[in-house]
Image (cartoon, rainbow, N blue to C red; front, side, top):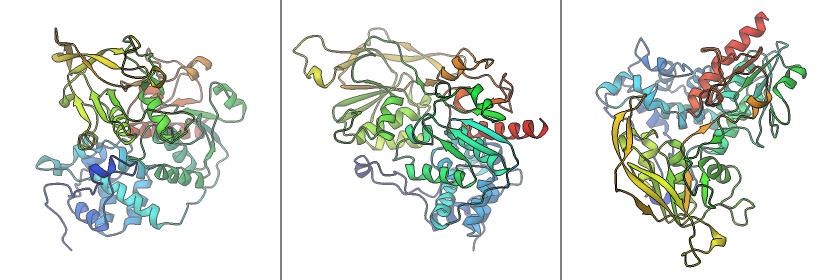
Length: 473
């Protein structure tokens, strides 16, 4: 068997045809075969200084697991990944590897980097398909920890603590674990069976899940200590949507991306006779350019929209969404209206408007062309309006996807928990320790909306800090 593959490009990922997939919610990318995975693994140079590992927020030992793939030891590869990551099948699908581990890959200097994310997904899927072992519960160490939120940060923290013997209980506000993995990311990008399997793996370690418990309302953080928990990790995410504060945003037919995706992903609102109905047909404008905007636009296509626009105030170069998601959206017929900014959502003016008011209120959106001016504080060129460039976009539904902030419920019901001006919990860097004794936090509850893998990294750091705190308490 050859030892290295000098192919300059990644082994292609099989996908559903665009015309077929835009009519279903099945996963778009189909995954590597064993031959695909072997071929791609042989592109790895097994660098001694492991630059890719430094780019991974949870420090997966990447060259080591890829070396096992080269040996066709897929279970051995899974074992290496799972020592660092509690959610490998998830990370292999939704992590922005192109800006993290793959961005550091030496093969990327003169071609495309090794497809680390695709290989991680292959290994996790292989394990889930071939392994019947559910894992064993570690010997308990006598300490109890409460986790607030069953999203990526909370599940990672829970898994790391459970592996070293802590009795861990996760409190989740919704009826299903997974957080943004369940309510935010659509089935065609992250099948819910994958999330369910990852949660089952954690339960096999002894992690307890309590759903339909809203911390800050059903129970307070301080009451968790009264119940015998010795430390609390807050990973409640950033579920409060932002709006533009332009006229017409309160009209029927205007959604936040959170509501739009939650209705579809978690509540089945696209089904006939749903108690929480959602749009079907018509023309949809999704305002924003991140991964969530792509998810909302591609969901609208699958819900039967006749036309879907992405409306973004900067150019394509500044789109924050993953390149793969942008490419898939374009393949599915979504039109990108770049350097365009909404100024007003238009509603009914008189009885001659073309739609029945009983079925919706939005009839259009006023927009203005933009140009890129001087760089802002983050170095991105600031968009500025082009005088006299206003126009009306004929739409029936508007989805606002311009970011989220942490919900203020925990902040408002917990004493001695400092937060910043955006509502994020203030923590000690590298540990997640808050200003309240025994309370740690991480993920979007601290940073605002960010990536799944960065939330997992924060959960991992906090788990190590909690372990040290309780061992030396």
